[in-house]
Length: 135
Image (cartoon, rainbow, N blue to C red; front, top):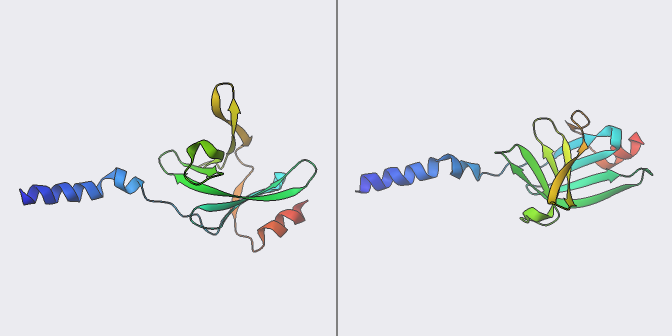
């Protein structure tokens, strides 16, 4: 009996759903979209600064929460921590396509905001100053 119990406990902790709970930490990573003067600066294991520039070249910084969905290969960015309905942006990890979440008549849906190839991971000392210098 104790042998079966030990095997059950071992399999439970080594199963893939348990490993799926592992968080991916993007701290100190930066995603730059230079053509559009946008950037995503991951400041901790769950916080990201989004640097966005509008059509008048006015740049703003907003701080959000993020979580990495390893199963679907997305970085999801939220206004409130652990609130799936407060999702603002999603970044597809393989292509770095950025989607914005919007409310439509049918509910929340995504719209492509930045196409594949417009963003890339970079290493820059002063991220905000660099984006400002691109203008």
